[in-house]
Image (cartoon, rainbow, N blue to C red):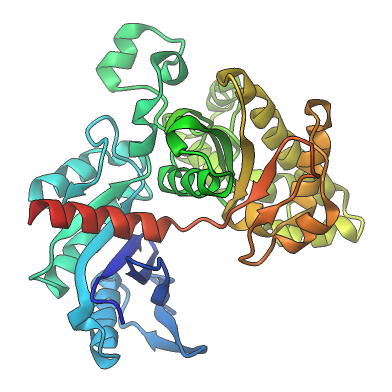
Length: 399
């Protein structure tokens, strides 16, 4: 067993994902999920030797601390506790305050909470996870890795909104992006696959999942991305609307909608779920579409069409393109979505390699475009490995 395991925590408002990452191999020696927090059915589950185990949490609150306390007990039972050298936390929004990984202290937690208006479902929960981890692992340093940090290299023309400069400056309004650790990881892996330095390569990274975004990465740096001031912008997603005419929001407010109702509609009742009226899960959408459901078919078409449009539009940001990368739960596994996007990009010369596309699923990477056509590939993301690597690197630098 490696002597350098990093406990990676992704703490949400009603859930907590965790993984013990070997910083040499990138493999998770243990992973699990706490879910249904603040509900009677709250549990923590994990797998050991392929067998799923579960621990029921008590009461209706304090579940973040209970979950992390159970993780401590679990790694101790498995003889892994002494191999954990540090803790890395995923943080969705760092605003302009954080453009790199930081050591977590009280001021950092206060600053992350202060950015909660930009990620109200995520940032407060991240701090809950940090405080719980600090109590459970008092001798270990903790580090915060920000989804937005990778996008701090975007030029002004990419992150600036066309509203008054005074408003932008007063309220720190700009494009921030998200999924930075995923886009960072897969573009570096893609550069290895084509035997080019990442500093001399250009990719369009397409992270498709319940949350979805496209990112242009030139010479290893993000130069544009589809998510915006918050993770609501850009592509249509599982329950999020993506780009929308702001006049629709004004219209609904004038019709008597409250801001709370409007926010819930756009964040929790739109996307796949909103159009189909059935489900937010892409697999369920495709099953219903194949069974002849019109609204499911429309949801599939809108999702794929918008993704293809973003990919096509981002070609203008590059002098050359080494490849398109599909990643994320849908990007890695949904053959119909990738097939449809490739079909929509045919004007640019993209042609699907049917066998390659069918093979690159369920954890398998591969090239999904035909030989002698523009390159498209699938690379499974590993955000936890990035968080572990960056946390360990900063720990070592501080030492």
